[in-house]
Amino acid sequence: MRPLSWLKSESRLFRKHSELFVLSLPAVLFKLVFSYLPLIGLILAFKKFNYEGGIWGSEWVGWTNFKFFFASDNAFRITRNTILYNISFIILVTVLAVSFAIMMNEINRRWLKIHQTVLFLPYFLSWVVVSYVMLGFLEHKNGFLNQMLVSLGRDPVAWYQESVYWPFILILVYLWKAVGFSTLIYYAGILGIDSSYYEAARIDGATKMQLVTRITIPLLTPLIIILFIVAIGSIFRADFGLFFFIPNDMGVLYPVTDVIDTYVYRSLRVVGDLGMSTAVGLYQSVVGFFLVLATNWLIRRMNAENSLW
Picture (cartoon, rainbow, N blue to C red):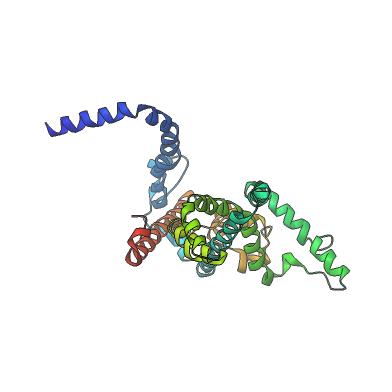
């Protein structure tokens, strides 16, 4: 009788909220088709894929596909680049986005839409478009930066031949493109803070800085931690467009611009093995999953209220 009563209870719940279930159906189908059904293809990580045999008819090779990445002489370098760049992105984007969100909360409402548009617009530009913008700045003969250097009596710099500048260039370009989106998320979090906290603090004589340090940042901390945990899950995944299009895939820059995703793309463009690419993608996902678990565990040990679960 218990399963029957449970079924009746669920049926009543569905009828009560049927409109909400119908509204969620497109998102559920989208997630099912594009996120869960493709998981079947993960079996390719353990097979030597051939088009004649298909997924199920291809030869089983076990862990052989994973050796493609780990046996490479460049494995340490590209893994180091991927992790260090992502750590820099996470820290700098968080600091700048929170700072900009706090400043946006203080500016006149008449100018708020303009500031939001200026910050958010780069997010919609593709990396291909941004790469041409950067070429206009960094081109050796007619680039904007070299024209400025020449006008100041300095020698032009061969930006696409000097690897020493590119860690800074890549970080600045990524911040320019990504900070606006994160700023709006944190700004929405600030708008959700009860205004009575600020009013009470002002009555007690709190300064602007004290309002930020004693109210805004502490109440934003749960949101910051949630976004931090999510970002940690992608620390082994690099933004392919940033690292491939912005440096123009220049071989001399590989020591500082090559990451896991670009290395695998170039390698498999020559080899053309789907099993190897699936193996690297699975490796990135599994490592990211365990990093999320570890990060959440550490945060729960420090403050259980700020953890995701």
